[in-house]
Length: 85
Image (cartoon, rainbow, N blue to C red):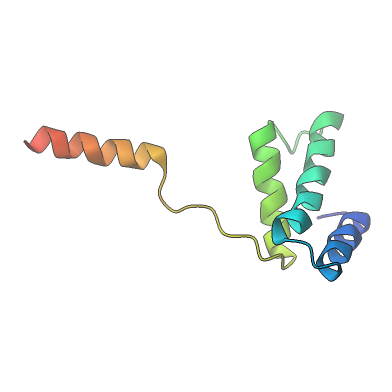
């Protein structure tokens, strides 16, 4: 659950007409602080970013959802195509 101050800063950014990425940055910044403090909820930097963006989406920030396809999925499909020929 994000802190009230984080929600307040994100709302101020929205009111000022800032981009959604700027608004979501407040939530990511909060998670990075938790990572620096050694909170067991966050294991690494990438996870902190993912959690921050997820919380921003829950709070209503219009951040695009993560991509459906991944690099590992593309590699697997090309390997299958090579095996058939």
